[in-house]
Image (tube, rainbow, N blue to C red; front, side, top):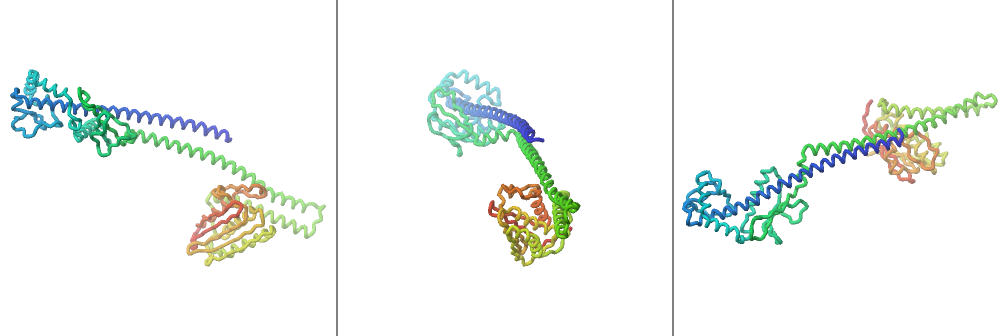
Length: 491
């Protein structure tokens, strides 16, 4: 699939996902808005019920007080309303005066005859009604004397419970153009929550206006929480689709990149294999050409060329086959005790001539007190050879390579240090990826498949070790390999 098609597919998928997110967001927003409207309606209903009950309580107190004080009503002399039991009892047994905030209901006596009698007597007592109306019309006492904050709190709790509102609230009572009269302990004048305002005793004819103000500190959380399972499942589904979409895009682009890397690998492999094949073919043609005088010296030279190129060809093919074996997980190690000092010395000897040809040097720093490790000698030698080979290839000047070995109580360390071009921080994260090759700027003669360091890391980890890199661009690179001193791996 071409890049254009991938980007077009990503664009279409993005539009679809954005559309889904917008729909989900619109649904959640509308659901929250509906909850808010319902909530506000229920709160306003509760506040209306509270203020109405406060007003009714005050009105009934006026009625009962007047009946108690009336000299003309014989029933009022002998009876009064018991607020706790809602029954009429003998007035002479009353020991406490009527209180403004007591719960009373003048017209809900159990005795219907008594209720009818009250209604008839009150209707006929115009003087009593006149006195009551005068009390209700004249200027009322201060709001502080007319209300009780505890009573208001009880009434609010009762009304909220009726309507299923179970959330913490704060309220206060204030006069018009004046400071607060009463307030709960955590009430704040400035708040981000919606504030509900309700007039107290709105039917007063002559009185300073006062208000009941209330808000819910955790109102927003309450709305989202009230969405319940539907809201949570909708949010989870949206997040899941976003993560799936991102993962899909990453996989697509990774596969596209891997496809490009494999294409480059095939091109590199073709070039790498073509060079020794061409050299061997040319050498064989020289042997067949009778027109060229073949002396022993030329024959020896041609034989050396064929041998070296055959080894090179076999080495390249072996690397590819080894990585294929690793991918299938079928590699077998022949582990035995090996002396890493001796192994490092042999590797250095193999590259000594190549380094000297470039006027460089290779030095050893072998200080391991216990240099013996159980490992596969061939693969262990290969990982060191790969690192030294890279140190030579990626050097613009005279190569200076140091091979080191040391150990601690639990670890055996090997290091390969060079003065090459170095590796950038960006490339260091990917140098161990299969087929990945570091950009070498103007160096075009560096050949390879991008398998060397991947092979090194795999072999090191298969031996229970780890590999770290220390490098700066233009200042060389140092690879540090660490292995358990008491490694006991078996096939």
